[in-house]
Length: 93
Image 1 (tube, rainbow, N blue to C red):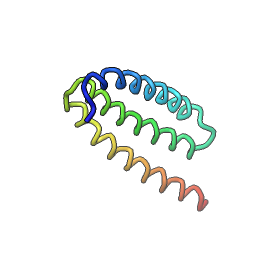
Image 2 (cartoon, helix red, strand yellow):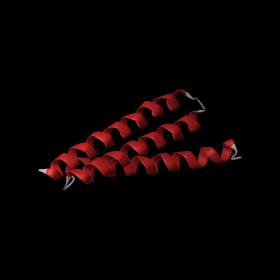
Image 3 (cartoon, one colour):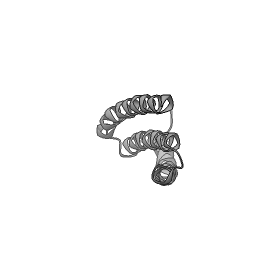
Image 4 (tube, one colour):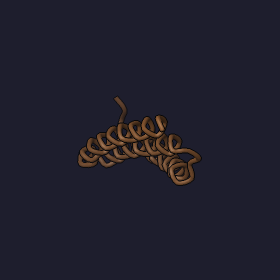
């Protein structure tokens, strides 16, 4: 088990690393060369957002942000299904 004193040092660094990764993914979503690249960046962005929610939940010690991660992960799954169907239809044409 990790002590609370150790979490106070590690969590701010992890939060800043994930925030930097989210900025990079946002750039790739906006300027992606192809649609699959943009979808992959959006998936990585939302997974990082879910991890960021969990890190902030650990940092503040409250479970309320963890509730928001569940619908967000379902949204990512539904987005993947719709984009996969779109890409399959575009490939047939």
